[in-house]
Image (cartoon, rainbow, N blue to C red):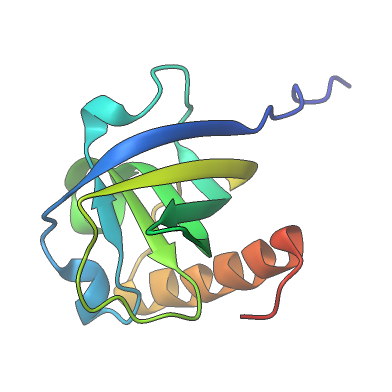
Length: 131
């Protein structure tokens, strides 16, 4: 049996762009990142990461890839854990720490929401915080 290659942490700057607002409506608001700022070698998936702007660093769960539940195109979205963002920054710096899983489709939005909560918990454990 072969194991997957280890993930190498990756850091990149990105512009924040306007999204559809869907994350907020399902209880997981996100900052949407400009796709042309995403490193070309990044595989689609769910990631544990840190996001920095205004000299502050936040723990975040990141989705990069298609959004099959909504039959929507590729996006890169970061959910800041434990903080409400009232005004989105113009630019952020993302440090991807670990790939958590592949993108999956879910039968319902409720099943997606439950998985998002599990992803957030896993991200907290990976990053060593309880925000």
